[in-house]
Image (cartoon, rainbow, N blue to C red):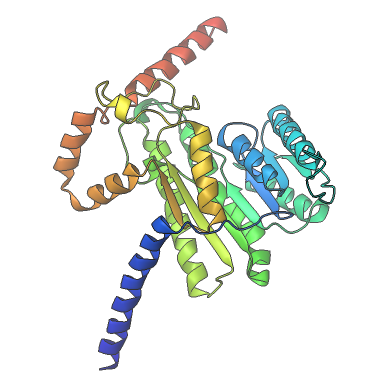
Amino acid sequence: MIILAEFFVVILKVLWAFVAAGAKWVVKPKEKSVAGQVCVITGAGSGLGRLFAKEFARRRAVLVLWDINSQSNEETAEMVRQIYHELDTPVAKDVEEVPPFQPQVYTYVCDVGKRESVYSTAEKVRREVGEVDILINNAGVVSGHHLLECPDELIERTMVVNCHAHFWTTKAFLPKMLELNHGHIVTVASSLGLFSTAGVEDYCASKFGAIGFHESLSHELKASEKDGINMTLVCPYLMDTGMFKGCRIRKEIEPFLPPLKPEFCVKQAMRAILTDQPMVCTPRIIYMVNFMKSILPFEAIVCMYRFLGADKCMYPFLAQRKEAMNNNEAKNGI
């Protein structure tokens, strides 16, 4: 009888979860403030990392930027300082004055593919900035080779940067979050971590791994009843960042599902982070595709891939990368 009662309660909680989720479509949840909170962003020197830095700067967060490229990281920091300066400049005389906001952005050269670099840089951050409130695991790489043509070193690099680094950054900053029962960890993954395509086995595996890590850690935090620590999984579709330049689906379908603007993806991700949304897929059709993958037979999925041109969509990208590499070798006389 007890288990039946508990099962009935579970059913009610599941139904309530659906109602609560539906209510958020009608009444938009209020965004939380991150002003003054310390936010670490990996891969901040370009792409999504740079855009995340600018968005958090507009919300007066203390930025800690990690990147393997010192110059590009400093360029991002300069953009952040400009945003801070604009926030500190009064717009009009009749506007109520706010306390001056001192620019707070810190840059660190860190190779997240090396755990010693991650741990040592994390220690510097704690010593020079303070404890971290928000961790954005954003750094990512792609090898751009077919499996049998890809050097083992590049496969390992893809797995380490895109997946293993999340373990190390989390181990570095999570203990204090647990102690304070406060924090937010964001995993920037990909739609290719939910469903795959041909030619990018290492990239898909790394993103599947990152999502698996994220989901398991989310369950661990719930099991530990650490409700003050939130997690958000970000899974965007193909973006117009140049990372997969040349990737194409069927030309008749592409106008309806074009590469996304990275600014749009980051805006959607920021909305999810600031409202403690567990997961955000951009565009929303990704939710449907992921669901269909779970219920359809594999041959049905293959049929749909071929119709959409998604089965070989990465082949033009791989061909361009191979041609570029051959041209570089020719120039270098290799």
